[in-house]
Length: 294
Image (cartoon, rainbow, N blue to C red; front, side):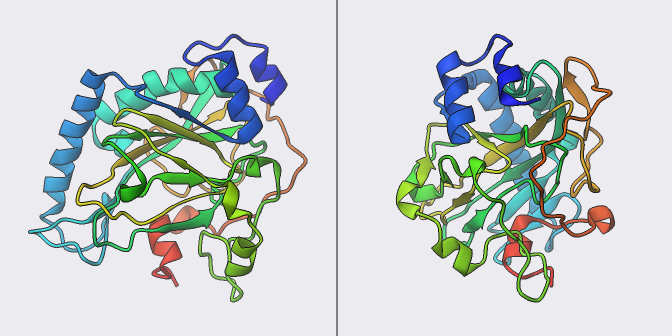
């Protein structure tokens, strides 16, 4: 569903001004949006998973681990598919976040995936500039990710950064010169970006970030002793249909979380880069950008 049609429906969780800001700029921040009781539940479950990671020494189907990870000092880069790992995560994704998603996708909303990304002090966890839609092309670009900061996040612990209005610009090649998928822009393309316009999306625990699938975004490394967990849930309008295999398919992928299933696909004429065939599995953007997948 395209912008004008979405805007013909009333907003429920955000204001009309906030909704128009998102469509105009490709991102939105909602400070202190998540109730404290919900945030407490999410953090309680997350801490249990971090403790569980102490029992493994290398990345597996649940955890993407940094090289520094040890039993004594766990360094989890990502909890994969949290929506299928615990009911608390799925209730959050299919409840409050789905309600919020309907203000941007229209009344019919499809869940695509979730992930829980971390940053840790002394870990090289910078995420380079990239766009999301090249990982999972759809028939239109009403696809977006809603992030929830589980801890207070400022410039010290690696906030999400975005380039406003970049969702209206070009899509970039995210392969290197040898044809390897790296999940990010090359240095020449990064050099063409006006970094003076970058916005850092900071907020207290419970604050929300939203970015469109075409929006250029990255995040600096953490310089804080406190970890930075960012719970991300990706949604689409029901008429945005996937072109390629899902990179990280959970049991809830493509589930309709608001409204009804669309029997029609709406097509945006702008082309999209095709990623590798993910049917054989996917690691993470951290692994791709670090060259671990080559």
